Length: 410
Image (tube, rainbow, N blue to C red; front, side, top):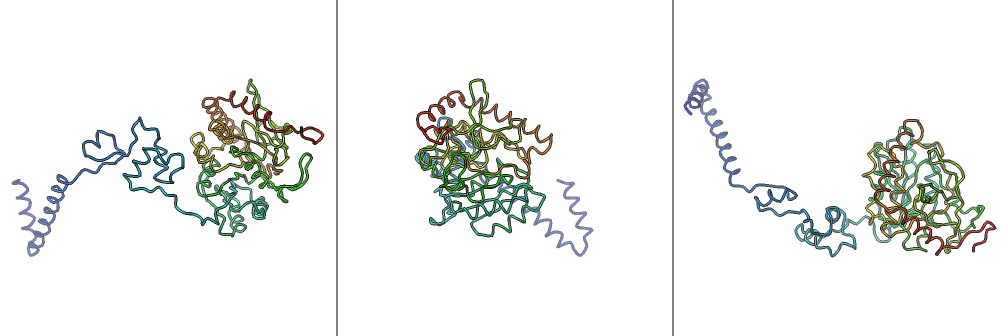
């Protein structure tokens, strides 16, 4: 203490006429230090409510963590707090406790007036296909079955962004900008934005039919545009959760794949060529349709109820910047396992216009292979593919009329 007193006297002695000001400044500073020390000793300790139980017990704070015995998981609680309650967890005791503790009504913020809620939202993943922007935009704008358009503009270096802005001037449409996240994360973000009943996942290298698919093709009748056609399929089967407008795939017991659709398999991999014709018809539309193990993107239609119950596309399998190879099959197997159905019909899209971006170089093709194996391994480990295969075969044979080569159903 004596050295401090000596130092204090020396400093004030050198201050001269400013000695009263120096005294006041030093005394004020010491008083503030003393006050802070007292408050620190007497004030309660602030601890995160998600801190470990022993730390919470020492402070008397309540925890928001979920005991192991509770049936809901942390994701359910998070969904309650941030996005609103789903019908199937309204009576969950964990959710009820969280609502009581937080004073949380868990209401989803209103986005639309009831009469504005879209039935169909088309979501387009965009990256460096500026030459296709106008055709895609006009096909969607002119389609009466599409009420909302969301563009996932993922860092294009051409003029795609400017062209989307020029085409989509209506307040009902949105452009979401990101930097090379790739489609799995971009699609999820866009779907969370929308309150639509159905989503269409599209890509900017695939062109919708200009006349909305009303042409009379080799084995269809002109009656429905490509969107209303899919909606008819959903109406005909309330359990239908996912529908491809491109290709559906089945596998045999030796893991050999069979592709069904009306178009060429041009997805950028090594397997190309004419796919097998869809051998069944929808009893509602009388157009080719069948249930399949995996529905390929794009276009890929998803019923929003099934998407919400499945938790969206699985971003855990794909790093940011990686192509979402087999994201459609991961979703399809998850849907079958959760009690939904997956199918395929022909939407008459023009595929690969301007080239597939994720197959534009040898390094990208190699990355596709790595990501595909990661996703396929996850599917093999998670789901009983043999059971799903047999279930799909039975469902087709028992519920759908066959399409005969002479154009007649049986």
